[in-house]
Length: 167
Image (cartoon, one colour):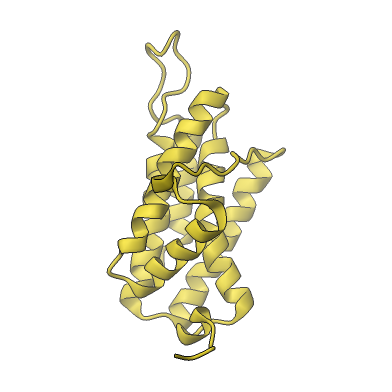
């Protein structure tokens, strides 16, 4: 057994690994913050995103499985009832722009260093996290009736994320 860190065995430096591990939870937060919601709805969105992250530990992609495992070990395992705090950025627009910039950076990194299948799986996974979050709770309406399942702002973030991850 090697003492070499997993990220190194996958061909990444410590800062590169930090980008890849930090991005999924940042995508979750930015997607949730795209439209203001009640605390209950924000928790629903966060739980939906964390479920997608947690489930990825079983991914056929070694990269995605390793990243998901690192995130769950850091923030908590939803399968065990562990709930990390919900992060609500002070400036959701600036936060989303930062996340999109990091997504473009991750795209370039994956293109340069990762196996193509791992890169595509990772990028698809990020969009899947955003999809899960934005579809988890409707916004607007009265007493849960009416409202939009996915708002224009949420849709725009998801679409911008997909563009930032496109080759």
